[in-house]
Length: 290
Image (cartoon, rainbow, N blue to C red; front, side):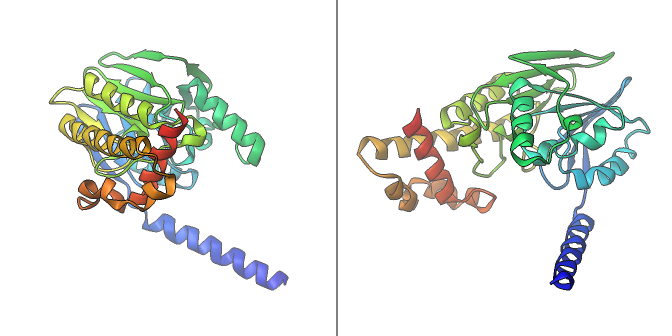
């Protein structure tokens, strides 16, 4: 039995290492000193400034060294500030690693609460991974040549989402309130809702202009037009499902009715983490609960 357990453990170890080696980190320059880093998990925003490197989200803990190595191609400075767009592990997993090397972590106050509660339930989150500076509705950060604004959007992807906007660089990080060309994951158990999600996207559209570079939580770099297309998709499907609810249809009826999402299914929106049936179920449940 011990031999079997050792073999399974070793296989798991080699499997994880193989996955890590297969992860490719890419960096795109968006404007002077602002970049987008993609790897595995949520997209990372990067700002090289006079105080060090400021990043938005930090993916998984096991990727931290690989992320740091790639950041060295931008600057020799250390990561000194991190802001989390929400609490999910593919956006906060590297918090502890960066905190132990001196980074200060910021987030909306519900992010800290969610992470802290999860640590009590699962016992696998270190206190050093928690944000040490939190805000309620908004936060303003000032640098020599840049100003950063954080906006809390209520009950969207979760109850602690923040949009991060670089006012001079004209770059907007949407966190997981935007999945470019994909159906979004709306975490209903953590305070998310479809109507709150739609309002968050509308907030992003208000902030952006035609020249804004928009970093989605997942997916390729986007424009305001892409965000508007995403909003139309959300509204169209939500309206379709609301009509079904008004007609007395059940959750199972909506789940099976592919016509409700067909316009966007053919465009590949359901090919990501959330498939077509999942988004129909999520929106139905959210609307029934509101």
